[in-house]
Image (cartoon, rainbow, N blue to C red):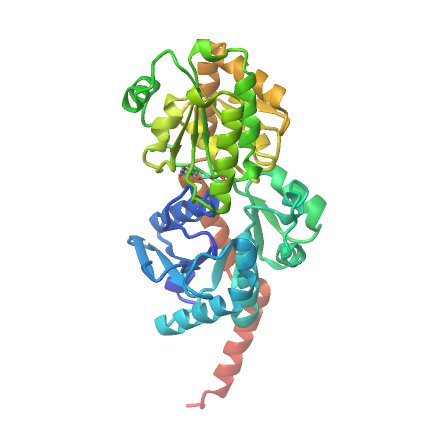
Length: 434
Ligand code: UDP
C-alpha cells in the first residue's frame, strides 16, 4: 500500500446526501455529520470521497466541496426520492456503481466509513468483495427506535439483522455517546469493537453573534421570552410535547412569551403531514398568535436564531445524539431536553440546561419556566453550555479522533505483515539467480 492510498477514505451515506439542503424530512443530523467530518478530514490531509444516492437527474454527479473533499452521487434505482425504509433493494446496484467508479479511477478504497444501517450493508459487502476495512456509525439504532414507535416498518427484521452483523464484523464501531454504546451492548450484541467519538459542531459559526445583535437582526423584541425548536418535522422529535408545554407555561402571553418552530417540510410528505398536525394542535391550544413557523433555516442563519432564544428545546422521544442541543449550547443558549440517549451526554442538568422525561408535558413546562423565570441563572447555564461544547464537541476535535482511528486501522495487522512477508519471500525465491 502506498502513502496515497493510505490517506484515502470513502464515507458512505446512501440516504443522507452530505451536499444537500439540511432540515428537510430525510436531511438532518447524518447529512451534517458526514459533510462536516468529511471537510474536517480533508483539512487534515485525507482524500475524502463521500458516496450517496442520486435522487434526481438535475443533481450534479460530483460536487467538490474543498480541495480534498467531494460528494459523489451514484445511481441506485430510478432517479427519484425513495424513503429510507424502501431503499434496501437498490443497494446491490449502488455497490455495482461504486465498484465501477473505483475501476474508472484506478484505485480501491482500503478504508470505508459507513453511516446508518443501509450503508453498513454496503460496507460489509465491500469487505467481502475487496477486503476493505470498515468503520461504522449507526446514527440510529433499530433496536431502540422500534421501542419508541407504533408502526414498525416491514424492513425492521432486515435492519435488526444487519445492525447486529455490522457490530460484530466491522473493524470499529463509532458510538457517538456512552449511552449509545450501552444500547448496543444491551440490545444488539456483546461482540465487536466500539469506540466513543461524539458528533461535533462548528464552534466558530455557532456562537458568532450575541443575543442583542441576533434579536435586532430577526426583529424580536428585547423583552420577549423566546422558546426555540429546530429540527425535522417527525413525531419522534416530540414537537407536540413542546407546544403543549408552552401552552401550559405559567408565564403566559402577558410575559411576551414566543415560540419559534424552525424546520423544513414538503406538503403531502411525512414531514408536511407532521407540520400540519402540529399547526392544528397549536391552533387548538390557542397559541397561534405567539407561535411562528419560519420553515427551513439555513446553517448560516441558525446561529442567529439560537442566540436570539432564551431556551432551546429538544423534546425527542429518542435521540441517538442530537446535534441541535450542542449547536444551541455553542451559541450560549440553555437547553431543555428529553432525558434520553445522547441528550443525557451532551446536556448536563443544572450546568448547561435541564432534562425532563420524554413526553412529560408538565415536566417540560416546569423546566422551561424555571429557565425563562431566572435570566441570571439562564445566562450561567448558557456559558456552561458553550464551555462544554468547546472542550468536547468541536468538529476539529472529532475529526482528529477519527483520523487517529483510521490511521491505526490502516496499519497492517500482524497477520497481514506475516502474509506480505511470505509473499515477498516467495516472489524473491522465483527470481533467477545471477
Ligand atoms: N437543521 C437545519 N435547518 C433546519 C432544521 C434543522 O440546518 O431548519 C439542522 C440542524 O442544525 C442540525 C440537524 O439539522 O444540524 C439536525 O440534527 P439532529 O442530530 O438534531 O437531528 P436528526 O435530524 O439527526 O434527527
